Image (cartoon, rainbow, N blue to C red; front, side):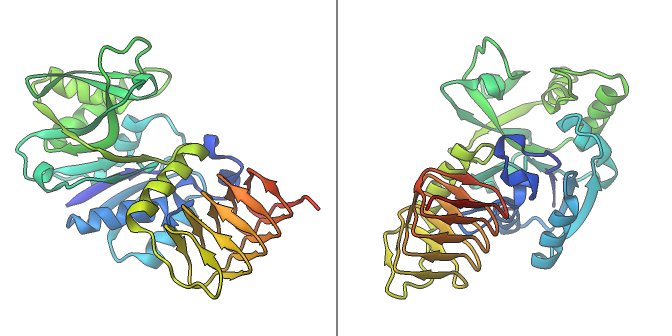
Amino acid sequence: MRAIIPVAGEGSRLRPHTYTLPKVLLNVAGKPIIGHILDKIIEESFDEATIIIGFMGDKIIKYITSNYKLKVDFIEQEERMGLAHSIYIAKQTIGKEPILIILGDTIFDVDLKPVLNSQFTSIGVKYVEDPRRFGVAQVQNGVVTHLIEKPVHPTTNLALVGLYWIRNTKLLTDCVTEIVEKDIKTRGEYQLTDALQMMIDRGEKISTFNVDGWYDCGKPETLLSTNKHLLSKHGTISKSNGVVIIPPVFISPKAKITASIIGPFTTVADDAVITDSIVRNSIVSEEADIQKALLDNSIVGNKAVVKGAFHRVNVGDSSEIDFY
């Protein structure tokens, strides 16, 4: 089985971190976002993937090829023109077998086996209070009747969560091809929701499945929230060395921590150094250096240095903040 994972976005809402690192390589609960996604599809018996890359795609290729034996086709999307465009440029990797499309900025925890065994195309949904920033699905008698991208006045609270199990792959590729080649845009982009609606209009029956374990990684606050959720379920303690640890946490065995309090809900990545500090509800990335600081709800980038901070910080890679 093949998964299609578009990861070409620049991640502008996660700057400054995404100035130097693709969004899907940001660490959350001990591994990059794309690592969580790949681990999940491998668990579900997928053995092939198409990864649609763009911004700093070489770093994504290096991470995946160094850590996974999955058969992967990398497709470069030079211009980010929407999800339907992503599928359009990758259509040569799509055969006759069903595919799973997964958006690269979300981590999900759902049993896909019933979905994969379904005879219908099916899309993941979740009830949200304010669905205006999502695609939404109108459903009648268990079947999708209409899909709308980011409605101003939504008539449903069922948000599309970025999981699409497509059985009729030929119809999908026909529809995305028509949308791109006829220049059919919504909000200035070629939308996957429009392609799926075109499939419905042409007779495709699309069902939905609920995804309660849907963790958004698109903004700093949601990245930290996702870190918290994942640590609550899968947090580990690799070492303590006399350090006070308040679980749940993830601490890399390669991190160096002395005279500090770590946790709860804190990720500390490889080769990070934390000295005389309190760090909670935070993500400390690789080779970061924290000294005499109290950090809460903070994201510290790779090789960043923070000294004497009693603040909430959002520090990009290779930066230095000195509050002494």
